[in-house]
Every structure is written in C-alpha cells, then in structure tokens.
Length: 291
Length: 222
Ligand code: SF4
Image (cartoon, rainbow over all chains, first blue to last red; front, side, top):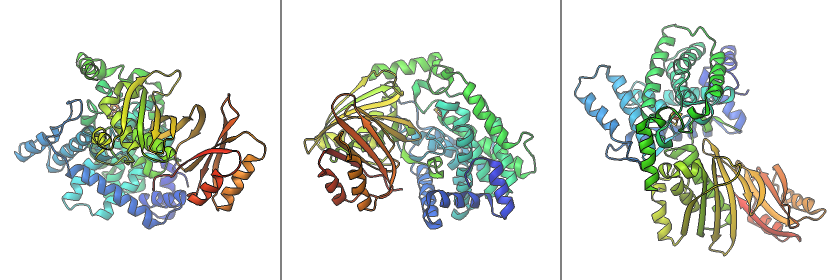
C-alpha cells in the first residue's frame, strides 16, 4: 500500500491487527524491495546518528554567523539547579531540542526529520526517554517507523518544506511526527496516533517561515523546542482519550492549503516576518559585508 | 520516489538539507561525471545559493562533494583547507541566471585526467538534486539511479546499439532520455539503470562507432 492517508494506515492496522509502525515497515519493504533486517538496520543507523547528534553537543561551538550556540548548555545548567518550572522530562526535552538545533547550525551531523531545520524535535522527545531507561532501542525504532509513516503522509498530501508551506510544514510536521511517535511508544491505538497528529498540526497551523538572514538559526532552533513540547502535550491528550474534532487527514489537507496561501514573503525567502525586523536586517547586512 | 528514509533522513551535516546536503551531492555528481578528482573548479552560485550560501556553508559543501565526501562527513566545514592541501584550485563567485531555480549551481571543472566539463545542477529540497545541463546540453536526472550519460553522433540505429550493449550486460533500463543540443550534431543520451554497469560494459559502449564520450554516476549506497 502507499502511505497516502492516515485513515488508510489506521484502517490497515485495525483490519489486520498490526500496530501502526508495522504497517509502515511492511510498506517500506514492499516499496524498496528490501528485507525487514535491512530496513531495521537502516533505521538503527538513523537512530544512532540522532543519538550522536545529542551526545556530541558542545556548548562552546558557534555557527558561521555567530548567532547560534551555547543555549543547550545554558538550559542544562539551569536544570541542574533544580529550579525549573517544568518537570525532569520536559527539562531534558527542551535542552535536547536546543542541542540538536544548535548542532545543525554549527555544521555538525544531524538527521533531517523531516528537514534539517526541524531536526531537533524527534530526538528531543525520544532521547530523554531512552536515556532514562523508559524506552528500549526496539521501542524507539518502532516509534521512528510510526513517525516516518506520518511524515510520508504529510509530505504526500501537503508538504514538509518551509519554502512550500511555511514553518507549520516543517516544525508542524516534525511535531506531528513526534506526537504520533510518543503515542505509539506508549502503546496507544492507531486511532489515538491519528488524533495526536491532528492536534499537533492544528496547534501550529499558520506558523510562518521567516529565518533571519536566511539562516537555519533564528527562530528555527527555539521552534524545535515548541514543536517538541507541543508533541508531548498532544500525545498525552490523545492517550487520555481526548479526540481531535476535525479528522486527521482533513487537518493535513488544510495545513497544505494554508501553506499554499501563505504569501511568498513568509515562505523561507526571508522577505517577511522576523527576517525583516531591524535586528533581522542588521544581521543580513553584517553577513553581506563579510562575504 | 520519496521513501520513509527521505522523511527520516538524510543523515547529514547541517544546517540545511537543500543548501548543505544537496550542495554536497552536486559536488559529488560533478566529480563522478568527471570520473576523477578535479584539479580546478569554478563554482558559480545563483539565487538563494548566492545570497545565503555563505551562512549555510553551501560553498564548502560543494567543494566537499568535489573532494568525494558524503553529506554526513564532519570534515565538510574544513573542505577549503583540504582542497588546498590536495592542490585543487578554486574560484567561487555569484552568478545570475535567467529563469533558474533559486538553488542553482554551475560548476566548471577540469580533472587530473585533463578532461573538462560544465555542469548545471539544482538542489530541489530535502537534499535531493537534479542535473539540468551538461556541457550546454539540457538533461534531466536526479542521481536516484546509476546513471550513464553517453555523448554520441546523431545517426540512425545508434540508440539500438547502445541499448543492446546494456542488455548484454544484463543491465535493466529504468528511464532513458535523448537530449539534442541545437547546434552540433551531438546527442546526449541519459540512461538511468537498475544495476551497476560493469567497467567492461562501459568500455564496450565507449568503443561503439559514433560514441564520443561517456560519463557514469554510480548512486550512493542506500
Ligand atoms: S523558520 Fe523556516 S527555516 Fe526555520 S525551521 Fe521554520 S521552516 Fe525551517
């Protein structure tokens, strides 16, 4: 089967009693003509690279522009003091999203998920669970299949690039993938995965893409945090039995439609939004005068 | 042809799949088609590649690709230095093309074997690329397959000889396109194939009367 709609995957899962992730894995085997072992090995490699992107973080690094770096370390230090408003898991989630987003800006190795700009969202929700012993590698890999199936559907029905649909398509999609991954990891039903995806996308709908000086730094890195935190709240809502009133595929189609209607200035061209604030313009001029 | 590892992936050095990972792939494509390491490279960057390329490391990424690095190589940021050590001469500058995709690069490369080539390629997003022009002739392929580009005379029957050679080598053709430049009588035929083409088969094709040159790109291992 093709990964054309969440409804189709959910129906296939319910019809055959397979978990959501299994349907995605089986589709990959069909489409690429590989064995389950090959596919799982590739997913493990992907997961290892994600893990590495978190663990090899260095708070001293700065990006070429000098704008990005060090915030992950600040969050770590703050968490150490024990005064954070949120609990231990969320503290780790915030720090991890920053670490990966900054590593990306500093030309370190990351996994685009679904894009490089939104590479911090999935590791931010998964790595802390794994590190705390609350998720085994096997569970994480299954959650990653769920996430990639969700991303494939969004990419097919709407889009996953800021240039095409704004940041709702990048951070929004990453957040939806992470929300579904968490529900899957916690043993939620395929239908609950669908609700989590719908809610995550709805919550970030309309978010514009407006990177300062065209660089994947400001506001991108911190939006990875919001994508991750949104994913967790939507996953918890779905697991609590809360449902999205708008069906998930309708939400995805709608996100694509909103994306198409976003003015081109707010789709990665850096001609609008934060990119044209006085600060944004100053950074752009500085980058130009240096090149 | 988007599979789930295009969604979760590529594993790459940041910061941008189009401006960094795609740029590495463009460099790799030029190196592969040239058949060796370039000794000289003139890199023209158009549109967004020119405007935000520096902050994204697009220039370093293309050079890294020319050096044969893959998109996840942590040496990408150091590629200028490595190129200098290996004696690769570089000239990188903005260009303005008409009606071109914003992420377009034009690479003029000359190899250790003396061979020269001009390649125009686009980074279309998600780290995926498309080759648009080779030596002034419009082509269209993405490196999703092993790709053989044959420059040959525009004579009847040439194509059937070419395809026979491929089928003798048990190579299955996935896509094929004939691209004729307006001037000279040359044709660029692009074969996208499912199996790797063994060196012998490429040699046999190169020796077919009417064939003037051939370049081959072997897909990165999945
Ligand atoms: S603002 Fe644009 S470049 Fe930055 S993460 Fe969002 S979509 Fe990507």
